[in-house]
Amino acid sequence: MTEEWLLDRSSTIPLFQQICDRIVEKIRNGEWPVGTKIPTQRELARRFGVNRSTIVYALDELTADGLIQSRVGHGTVVVNNTWNVIASSRSHDWGRYVAAGAHQPNHQWIQIINKAEEDKAILRLGTGEPSPDLLPAHTMLHSLQSRGDVLSLSYSEPRGSLRLREALSRYLLSKGIKAAPSSILIVSGALQALQLISLGLLREGSTILTESPSYLNSIHVVQSTGVRPCGMPMDKEGLIAGRIGPMKRQTDAAMLYTIPTFHNPTGCLMSASRREELMRVCMHERLPVVEDDVYGDLWLDASPPAPLKSLDREGLVLYIGSMSKSLGPGLRLGWVVAPEPVIDRLSDIKMQTDYGTSALSQYAVAEWLETGLYDKHLAGLREELRRRRNHMSTLLDRYMQSYAEWSLPQGGFYIWLRILLPLSVRKLFELALKEGILLHPGSVYDPGLGEPYLRLSYAYASFEGMEHGISRLAALIFQLGGKQ
Image (cartoon, rainbow, N blue to C red; front, side, top):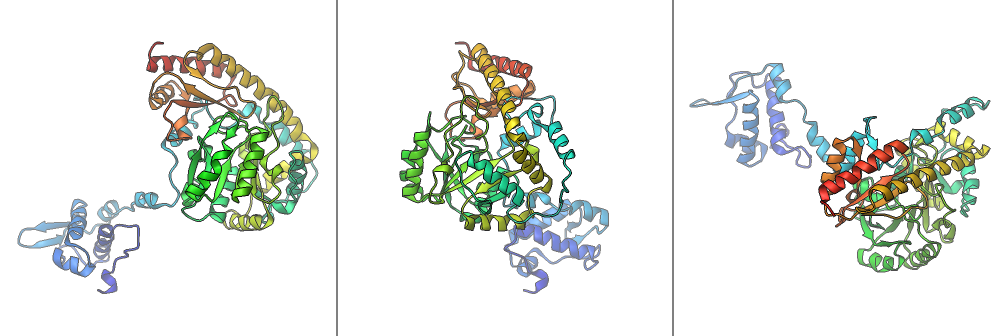
């Protein structure tokens, strides 16, 4: 077989499509002008080294495009070589490339949610970000304008701005975490931290243990690297530590991912004793822990127990923090605290992907940490979130007491609502969206949920929006679930 007829059998492009492309090329180049009788199906199958059925499929495509035609007694001939026909009929099929991409598409509901959030008129009753009213945009702008420092817009070093890492090192001491600047990597949000850990530390096919339900199921950044999440049971104190050892040995898990403080989506707060038990188990099993602490600063009633990382004496915990939930998601700024060899590995990958987190964001966060503006902002943010949580709790008591059950979270954004009536959450989601109310179904966070759950958030909607949304949600649940 000559190179002219050689097909790329390792390509994601189907063989019949490659054959179509070769024939179109010959027509376009004038090798096969109008009136040319092309080789027989048998001959083409021999030249391309494929089954005759593959040739038939390719020729049918070209016939449908108006380029060739079978004539009784004359075989198959070229009937058109005009550019407009070739261009329209052989336009590039990006769909094949999209389907072949390594990164998995978002959960279907998450795609719908993301699209709906573009509509400013939508009432976002489950969204995972604070309302713009809670973010200090004007104060931050004023604080940056009042400084006489020279702002560098150059690339920062691989680990991130030294000034910011030094500020974070001091900030983390308040949480009981001792981390030198060299053990901190600045990342573009916690999501990038998870991606870097998956790419840099885990083999394809690895298993990572996590709570069930879990935020990790609502994104595919880990799954797209070939890592498989495996759900673990929870109770009121958080992840059940006694199940970690058996599950680790059963699945040969490589890591544990957990959100112990104001868990997403349940809002659960892991107790201090459970944290100590979890660390003992993981140290015994030599199981590394990824601790996601992006909600840790958002306590509403009392300071939460110290992070798992504060109990870590063996470098077993990779600690993730972020400013997205407190200072502003648009900053796209987070960090990883880990042993220096891990930081070296992750920073090398980060430099290969984006050359570093925004210099402006790093400058702003360092400024706010150093001047005390961040602590002042947190005090006001906690007060406002407390008011919002209490308001949503009052509304749930008023409208949902007969239809659902829930627990009042001690911090974070979320209330995990279990609906008591038998109904289709998909139908509820669709009906609510038609009324301009956007929900977050529980199955996004655990596809195996056997009961209807919703993740509600009190962080985004206004007080008036919450009342409208909760009252209408109760009516829709009653409509779908029937009378009590």
